[in-house]
Image 1 (tube, rainbow, N blue to C red):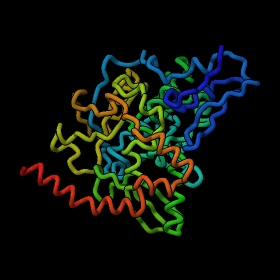
Image 2 (cartoon, rainbow, N blue to C red):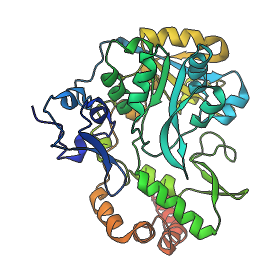
Image 3 (cartoon, rainbow, N blue to C red):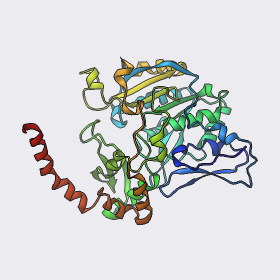
Image 4 (cartoon, rainbow, N blue to C red):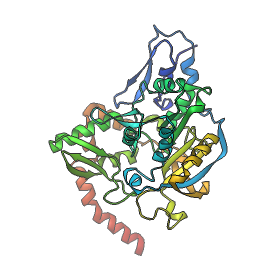
Amino acid sequence: MYPILITDKHTCCGCTACASICTHNAISMVSDELGFMFPLVDEAKCVGCGLCVNVCSFNTTYDTRLNLPQPDSYAVRHKDIDEIQASQSGAAFVLFSDWVLENGGVVYGVGYEGHFHVTHKRALNKEQRDEFRGSKYVQSDLRGVFKQVRQDLNEGRMVCFSGTPCQTAGLSSFVGPHLRNKLYLIDIVCHGVPSPKMWEDYITYLEVKEKKNITSVNFRDKKIKGWKSHIESFVFNNTHTYGCTYTHMFYSHINLRHSCSTCHYCNTKRPSDVTIADFWDIGKISETFASDNKGCSLVLVNTLKGEEWFNAIERKAEILPTRLQDSLQAQLCYPNPQHSQRDVFEKDYIRLGFKKTLEKWEFIGWRKGVRKYWGYPFRLIKRIIRKYI
């Protein structure tokens, strides 16, 4: 049987399941020019067993045997306002992961290694887990993590793993049904995963520009304008700065992984026990629930185990049951389309580097300023024309 071979980047999400399951260490995860990981097979070590091909779950036949006929939908907020303030939305992740830690389990989530390299990490207590709170709009490094999770499960530990749906689907396929009982999976409603290299280049660019080292980052800082704002913030040696350059790239879809535009999990048949997200439309359902603009989580309960898990955290949460059709977001219906110039942008990035590419594409530099400030009067005129003529 042939080993796994990626000839089209749209067909690989980089979850590492294939590399993790190879018993002959014939597969390594290597990065492309934007830092996205792909499997590379050493044919001298490969025995053609087919494990790597069979474990891949990035397809339409991923395992949904444990799923309820339809997920139960809730708006959720932690009763502790400090937990909400420290989290991205309503602190649902804290509620679920607290229960696992309190019952002797371990939690895997996304944090930082080195100088803000985004990676999955393991937490044995709440202090370590707190690093996982908040959004990180970068594809996380999973190398070695799946094997570590399996080792914890083999030792009888309860494990909570949170990640994108492609990551949880890959992990579930890797550990198999015999270990799935103690594995509690949380996926997020994912907009898409941006380039790891571009994120690290952005950090370097800001530090060179400010001539200071960054000591803290926040992809969505809600301290200034609340939960619904999308303002990135950085601390340079105790000095705060705010911006939206990286945010603009993210929402343009121009720096997302190719496979995000063909994601198989953008539906309500989720590959995890529970799904969490920002509940952006809560104001349309209730005028009072989460009306303080501090954050509200959407929680979808997808399995019977997820239902038991949700019942276990109820006493610490404010909960509002909602109809599924009132809770749907775009990425619960379809994946984001790939930017029409995504390939051209990548070629520019490889050829020109971070600064020149972002200047050319008007994410930074004087062209961006001209477009922003000189373009405003013309946009205003257009609005007036549409309204009165």
